Each structure stands twice: as C-alpha cells, then as structure tokens.
Length: 464
Image 1: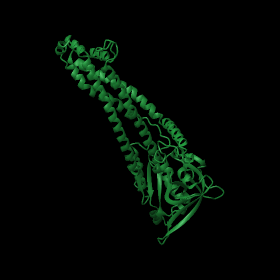
Image 2: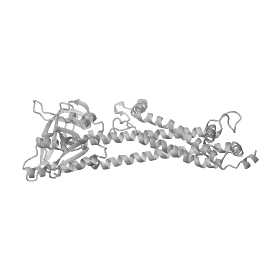
Image 3: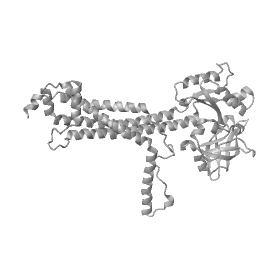
Image 4: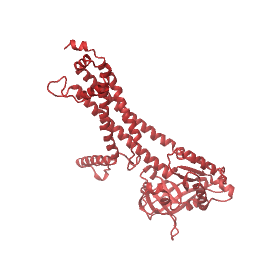
C-alpha cells in the first residue's frame, strides 16, 4: 500500500459511507468512541490553555509591579554612614540627584531614581498602622514610566512638590488609606524612631498632608506604602533606620543583557570606569531581590500545568480504546484489504493517521476555546461572582438574615491576587502544547494500529 492508499483508508475510517457493523446506517460504537475521544481531548485542552494564559498573565502582572514599582531593574544600595564618614556630613537631596544623574549615564541604563526607604508608625483619623515609607522625588509619578502606567490615581493629586503653604505632602496607597480612614486633604502623622549621637532611641513625629491616594491593583503592595518627598525623608529619618537606594531602569527587565548592564554599573560604582568610588555601595538585579517570590510563582504554575497535562493524558487514552473498537469492527474489511495486496505497514499507517486526525480535531477545538476562556477570564469571574452573590443574598433574605452583615463573595480575593488579571498569550508554549498533544495522539494510537496491521486475513475469513 502506498501512503496515498493509507491516507484514503484513514479518511474512510473517519468518514465512512456506511457502518461496517450496522445495516441501519447509524454510526458504530467505534466511530462514536473516536468522536467522543476527539471531544474529550478538546475539552481537556480548554483548562490547560486557560490555566497557561491566566497564570502567565498573573505572574507577569505581579512580577511587573514588583519590578516597576519596588525593586526596579537594577538597584544600587548606598551606605549613608560611609558617606558621612567620607564627606563629614549628611547626604542631601542634591547629592542624591547628582548620583542618580551619574548612574543614568551608564551604558544600558535608561533612567535612575533616588529613594530613601524606612519604616514608621502611621497615624490617621481612625487608627494607626505600620507603614513602609518611601521618600522619592516629588515628580516620581510622572517621571517614572512604571509609576505612571501601573499606579491608578484614586483621589487627589500625585504631585508632591512643595506648595506655598510649605506643608509636607504625602501620597498613600489605597489599602493603608482605607485602614487609617484618610482621604485627600487629611492630616497624616508619621512616628519614626531615630538614634541619637549617644546611641539612644528618640521617637519623632512628622506631620504630612495627604496629597493623593493611589492604587497599584495589588493589595499586598497597597497595604503598606506611604510616599513622601525625598527632602523630607532625608531630614527626618536617620541613616541607621533607613536605606538609600537608586533604582535603575533598562530597556527590558527580562533581557539576557541585564547582567551585562549590571557589570557596567558595578564598574561605575566601584570606580573601575574612572569615576569616584561610591563607598559601601552594593548592586543587585530585580531577580536577586525577588528570586524567592519569582521561583514560588513559577513552581506553582508548573504544578498547575502538570495537573492539567495529566487530564489531557487520560483523555488521549480514549483514542486508543476507540481505535481498538474500530479494529474489531473492521476485521473483515482489513482481511479483504490484505487478501488483495494490502500491506501490514500500510494498514498500520492508516490507523495511525486516524488517531492523529482525532488529536488534530481535539487541538483545533480545545486551543481556541481555551484562549477564548483565558482572554475573557475577568468577565467570566465577574459574571460568576454576580450569580453566586445573587443566590447567597436570596438565601439571606429567605432566612431573614441581616443584610447589613452581607459581604459579597470574591472568587479571587484582591488581598492575595490582582484586582484585574492581565492577559498574556504565550504563543511558544501554545505551540508546544499543540505539538505535544499531536505526538501523544500518535503514541496512544500505536498499539491498536500495529494490532490492525498484524491481523491475519485467513483466520478472519474462516469465521465468515
């Protein structure tokens, strides 16, 4: 048998003119099983593709916020105590801006932003809460592209430059603002602890006016961040209780050339490029600072995909069982083909092509449906939440429950997940899934196909 003959017979298996085991014209059990196997593979690919799209978007969304809003691509930490010993005075805002300007000229660095990080007790109208205080440039929310794109202004203004009143301005993230009961225009008090010259601890309260409230879309970050002007941070927080960091931006956070840029920064910081050495400085990439979280996200994604792959594996076994039934139903047909010159290899190829075609049909059905579900996941989740909350509220009313205590059900709690899942379609991984499913379809078709090729026509014809 030629390849064309095998292909023609495979088409006959998939689309028979009449069932060989039924005179009524209805499909045989084997044909129905093969159609069911195609459907099972398609349905099993839907959650696999959806999980891939959703997890990839979730990881990129969270990682993008950690990089763009927190660690930056490369971070240069400067020891302020070493600076004081070398220059005999506290570092000023002008010094920070000069260092940032110097670092922004390093090859591969597109921008640099100075920042002083510390902790304090934030006191508002209704309560107090620990806060992660970030002293930044007054125009950071417009100058830094990541801040401008990833932060959403909820209330007020994000300009922290000092106005005619001379009051210090502060910008709060939404979650901590809600916890403190603060809104734009309210007063905020930051209570910090500084070390005196004698080594004793001295508390200090600094008043601020809330200029605006922003949200990153990730509650874990919104729960602690308070932004104040860099000048106010340098004036009120001691070097012993804070750290000075310069966040460096590059063209691509995930580029393999990031390590080369880091080497250029190290050469500049330690004076190897001819500049003055920044004593006590250390250089880190975002992957160094967030490696534990990134590995945790990646391992969770891999585990979810493994579970989904097992579902596809189980579904693909249906192709094997369907082909076994078709071989049994077509034993007479196979015997006649062999008796007129059909080869065992040609018949084996025909059944392999039939199983492969079922896998192709499953891929063509499952991947588009999975993509459709993945790219519309936010709409699907919102719709499901509305349906669930409708029935839960109905039960509250039915049993005379107090509706004032009713809290809506959230399928993805924003305390742990992003408020809106970013959509990312990983085309390379989708191609791997498609080819893997097709190879799996061939693999599970091998045993029944070889069995069909080894059918003995004489034994079959004797039983007729």
